[in-house]
Length: 71
Image 1 (cartoon, rainbow, N blue to C red):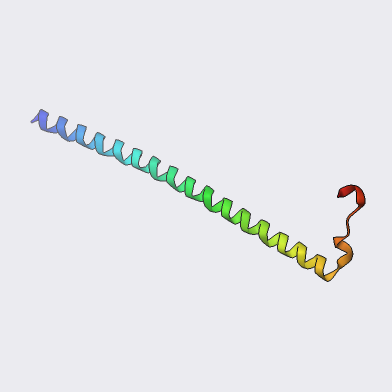
Image 2 (cartoon, rainbow, N blue to C red; image 1 turned 135 degrees about the horizontal axis):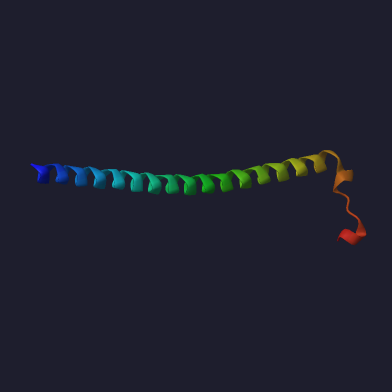
């Protein structure tokens, strides 16, 4: 009978260890995909801001003028 209990304890410990390891792997994958989506969002915002800047320059051409030393 004690061998049965020992086998059950070891099995439950192995299962809980695998569950914890699986949770850590899942969290790592989620962080990685979140980082990628944040990069895409940042790039999209950059494009949006550049578009708005060009729109402002079209509406007010004096904003597009540059100084000679900037060229």
